[in-house]
Length: 582
Image (cartoon, rainbow, N blue to C red; front, side):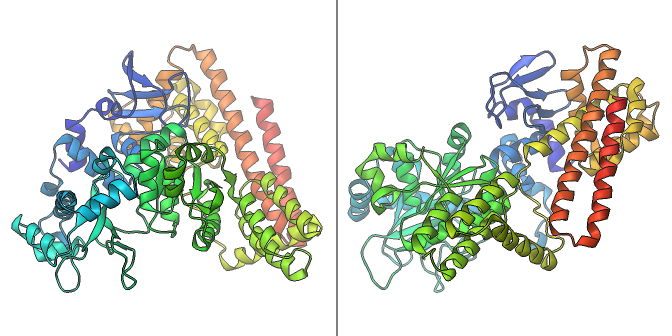
């Protein structure tokens, strides 16, 4: 038995899910409110019998591992580790001894946790650190304990000697990023702020100097280690994720202490990156919790530039990026300490990031000159190019044209020319991890419900003959359609069912959908539903194809337009044919 099977044997999916969603028994299944959408009527279903879950509002589903991946914004490996701890399983027993000769990450986690406790104890004995934390920063005792703030003493080997006395080696101290090149303590005479992963495990530290020294950096971070990668780490996510889910937005600040101050002020959906270097990995991780990301970087030049750099990244990832501007040029921590109520109000009035960018460059550049117009239009259109909504694009094309006193056609021609050049340089570039839009969710929902009817109602399978594989949105659905066609008399014969094994979870999910939606309906009603879903599937397929055709026509040379128009005519005929048969 491997680790996954062992975990599934020890844990029930309803127990795992109930830690995040309040479940109530509904026949053989459990139901609760979706953790992904705001709703009043429960649409989230857990099947103990099949050990799967399905959220009808967002059309997501899977087993306990996919659920943890969604809720904790982690990958399969992270979900495996979380569930292994819940099940009381030591994953080391499943790993080959000495495999790859790499570091023992569990040992490093233990060492870093030990270091955090060591620094916490040292804080109590440092008058300088206590004065800074409780008086200058005005943090409460509850806040200091919750964030595990500590102090690194100004000695050479205090932590090294303590860790070795607890059985850790010099090599492990190096791998955890706790020592300098001389083998002694890396952090000295600094306030220590633990950096934690999304589950709250310590993976490194940020250290702030407490005595002004022009030769020393104000902040020091743990270097890159097997556990800490600053391009992926989001500070404070372990404290913020529940508040993010409830509020449906996340605040992204520049400094770690800004986040802690915000948390203490009751705004707990606040996180930070390492300085202003926001990355695509970080935005994708946040997007698992909410697409509404509100930037609140410092109002200095570095903060303003960082906000601008975040715009194209947000466009690629598909998040709705806005800017929270603080009056008088203060940073969040300063505002919270001087006017706590103002912070609560400001975060509710963000400005859409692209509008912020337009206003910024409108104020900086002379739009009465050709040079100013060129720089303004280049900057704004570089972001507009990444927008996926055509109406939104048209809005900003018109706005740039108005502000530069140009024609919309001139602005759009610049946009189209730039796109053509991008396509020439990167013809196969596809955004792989952008969040699914409503259109995609709708296509997947309808195809899965149709598959549920075709798989579990043999008398409806002739309806599937009119459905082509390309109408489906993913390969797994196409393969299930092929199985249904190749096995028209299938009723669960184990010898035939073995072919479904690669899609076991998908089959369980669509079976659950059938049970929840259709099991009480008579065959005539089921037939009408299958016909409706088939017609809708074709309609959505045609809509998607025509959308692609429109983009191609914008860029295609004249000699290719006729072929594209012929394809559009074929799609119209296909839609008419299915509408007549529906």
